[in-house]
Amino acid sequence: MGPRNGPVQFQNSDFCVLPSERCGTLSSVQFLVAAFIALGISTVFAQSGPTPVTAPAQPAQAAQPVRAGQPTAQDSASRPSFTEWLDGVRSEALARGYRKELVDEALSGVEEPMPVVIERDRTQAESVLSIEAYITRQLTARRVRTGREMLAKHKATLDKVEATYGVPARIIGGIWGMESNFGRFSGVRPTIAALATLAFDPRRSTYFRRELFNALEILNRGDIDLPRLKGSWAGAMGQPQFMPSSYLQYAEDFDGDGRRDIWTTPDDVFASIANYLKGHGWVAGRPWGREVTVSKAVASRIAGAVARRAGTCQATRDMTVPMPLAAWQTLGVRTLTGAALPKADLEAALVSGNSRHFLVYSNYDALLAYNCAHAYALSVAMLGDRFAAAPAAAPALRTPAKRVAPSKRRAAKSKASQHPTSRRRATRH
Ligand SMILES: [Ca+2]
Image (tube, rainbow, N blue to C red):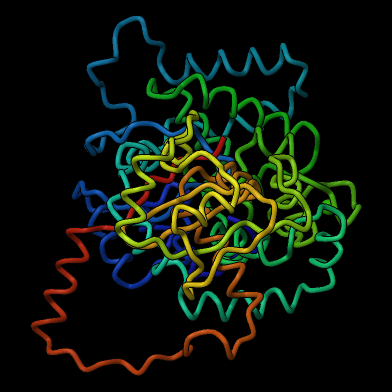
């Protein structure tokens, strides 16, 4: 992984089951559940949303860990061996004009598919956590505190990035925190080997073969050396967790040293995140949205009167079409304090969890583009709000622990493992 990772993160990575391997942020309960999965207990669990710029979402598979190299029903005599397949990749890379020594070096370390990659790909789970529960898990006092410290530490750079791209530092910080725990963990898996494994596997071979060549392209351009080209098991790289295609399109060399280093250079990390959001429609000076109050009666009125959006991503179908704030006001939507909505001439769409509701503006779509899951996008947005809020306005950072009888603790732990968290994170595009 990135040079920033210390021993602790490496240790976590051994148990990490999250597609993006953001295990640095696992709570102890999450960690326990993750350990169970790592032991082969197939279960629905995963953490958050996906990874920006990551692989395309796939329907969850019943988690049956399959060992790489193990014959499956889909294998047939016509399938090449991994070695034969890799020879084909090498030939195509040379035909594309990549330097021979680079191709040889990059592929020489890929002797066989990585079992851990296949297992994690097979054990991705559907989200069973509600939006509310997911947000609660993400917006911890510790993460908010760390985020404020890190944003303060990098204020000068973030201010420059914000001025350049028009994306607020707090939003960049929200994504940075969600993706790599503020740069502490960005994945230890060798990207070429991980992508080769997924490209050889028939499940999503076309997508990952393309990303494998994109990764070779990155090496060929000299932005990063092979030993440092690391990331998640699913190929998401560096602190922003960009897939190679997103890297090629959006990574920025903000410190001007000639390399787009999203692994260890904060300037490049922040600018790359901001450039991605700007490239997906973030408009400077506009808010993402706000949490609102929707009574049950109003919610059912809305369900009958307001259409849902279309779209290729599930989250866009799980929200309404945009309408003027005045229309929401007429329908009975109010601010969290029960006040009237602002009279701004803005259109907003309604995103609803089980009990919480949010009116979101067009900038919210850029967050969904990073990772198409409301739980993720709302967590980023609300983390940003918390970073920006005066510390005194935030809930107490330390809540006195309530005494819980041991039997209740066991019950709570058991419940947590039955209702895992997750939102299948699959994927950014
Ligand atoms: Ca740079």
